[in-house]
Length: 68
Image 1 (tube, one colour):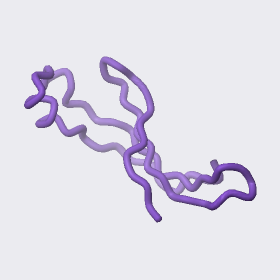
Image 2 (image 1 turned 180 degrees about the vertical axis):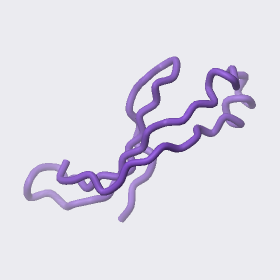
Image 3 (image 1 turned 90 degrees about the horizontal axis):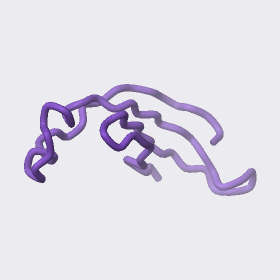
């Protein structure tokens, strides 16, 4: 990773969880999002990526968006 461009919180798409039979009250949490500039090594092409971290039932990182 080269640099963090921005950081914010966003509400998860609880309505999708409700359609899939998830527990809406448990799943309707906010997740942390980081917009980072990164490349695959020093000589790799630089890209901008939005990474989300969810602390729900299965905590972990997720690639949310890629900007060209």
